[in-house]
Image (cartoon, rainbow, N blue to C red; front, side, top):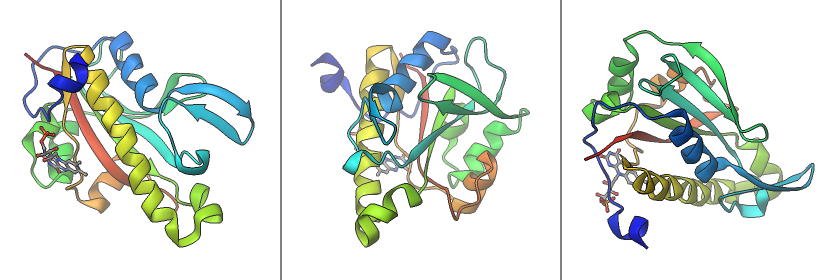
Length: 189
Ligand SMILES: Cc1cc2nc3c(=O)[nH]c(=O)nc-3n(C[C@H](O)[C@H](O)[C@H](O)COP(=O)(O)O)c2cc1C
């Protein structure tokens, strides 16, 4: 009740880093695995139409204890991270440019960047795929909002971004996989 009651979009972050445990909680809350029914049905902490789970979670890490700056991808089955590419100090500038100048995107400790892989959904839902992908994304980001509130952090959903720049930042082709949503996260007062 406390997390739901205090949830709001937060665009001002402290300079404090997130701990790895805090980041793990946020990843578990948003895309963590709850149960494996069989190879084609992996249940997660969020619902997904037809259990298709079309998302990959990339992280633009700036201040997380124990992690170098860079672009990481979450591996839900292992609850682990893979480093996609190291990043220099220009990561903040690139995040701001990729979000049409939204400064708080560059000030986050870590920015969640969710991509969709439409083919996971299209074989089953055809033209309704884009509706269910959009609905699924809402569940994921709402869990991030609530989990952030529980650890003294905050986030703000971002859908205003430049498709080409943000796809390029994390290294996806924008065709078989493309960014659909971002959420900068940081500690808050
Ligand atoms: C789909 C979606 C896209 C959003 N995109 C942005 C964005 O690009 N930039 C931003 O500052 N806020 C963005 N927001 C946050 C909304 O502005 C915010 O949720 C709204 O003003 C209500 O405020 P609250 O979240 O504090 O209740 C987005 C929210 C949603 C749900």
